Image (cartoon, rainbow, N blue to C red; front, side, top):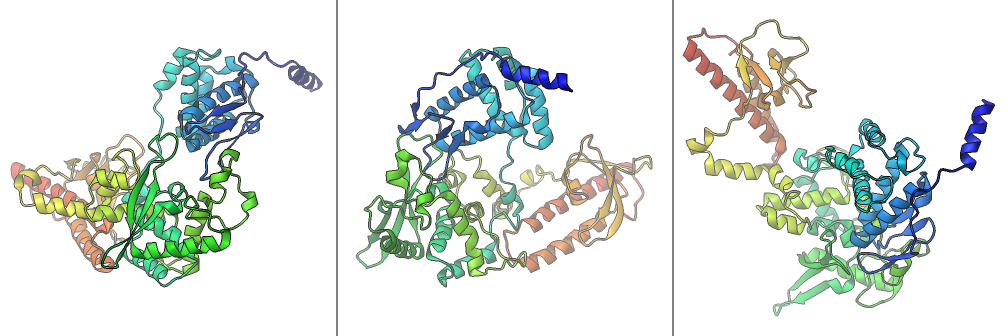
Length: 525
């Protein structure tokens, strides 16, 4: 034991030679032309919306590895948004914490990196390895010692999981998905009744009417709020909302959006309240001012003059989340206090616009998306889209014959099927009709049998399965759900309708097989 301690001490007093040493310039200019100090181990990025502190002291790794990361982060500061830099730093710090301790750059071998990736897969965080791959690729391109092109090429070939988007929207999750009609109505009524603090009502209404992110909304200034009074005396209100994810340089591009008179009046009242509390500071004064602990605001020094009074995104989210408690809004769906957050209101904005027929291209612009991909989740989740397609194509046999819900196979029961693969015919009303077939997948299935099996290509339906009884049970369930919900955009009845169409396809295929083979009639068919 003593020998081991001495060996450890010798290793500590004889550090491995540093293979790379970064020449710290002491100051760099970020993408927006604002200086960032790189003196010391704590760098503060110029993010007005939230605190962005890069604390290199929290990364426990050899100096040469840390220096390569610092050089890479400086490159990110010069070419990426401050929030992106902070996120990359955070995920690199996580990689170092998960990895086996390195001694120098020579330890960055492919087996060592792959081993760390496997640990991240076990922890469910493998998608964060994308930042590690990005760092290694940049260092290899710069020909830094210890980084090899062949390893970078191997890392480029690895398939990494990505963050699944649109799940809450597609499933209409009652806690994180879009608000339904009743919840939306109750929220608007509470705001009209003046429930809660003024700044809370403004924060909720801003997301509900614009769908913008909190980081965009906290940057709005008084000059962005405009009132146009028509000759008739009617007032029209609009806001200039900054865009954040379009790689803009030296400031934020702003898109003017019309808002409702209700929100316009609330903003006028909030501006008057801000002037009473903080004084009139001119047209660049923020619309959403922080009201507490001004001395604790960690705004970077270069941004202090312009953004010291701006509300932080964390405070914005708090105001939205706290409003439902202040207004005591109970969700009819859950019977509990309505759960609010900016993202959920953003989902509500996108869903309601999609239900009104807003094209995906326009919806992407309204939601400040660079591409249409993300906005397509709202379009796909809207049952009215399906209804319009049904009206357009439903009477045309050329199209109805092409839409096949059942993609599996129909086979007779052999009796030799593995009990673990047999799918029980349990109905939504908890009736057990017996086995309907078996699962032909050779992997762990993530569907929810038995209903989801009918639309799965791996499903093998038995010829004598109780498919007709299952169809009748679903018809009763869909009718009950429709009467109970009263919401034409409710996703669950629509999903059950798809299952019913698949069951009808199974019955049709079984019937065609009987006609072709003169098979005897089964009571359960």
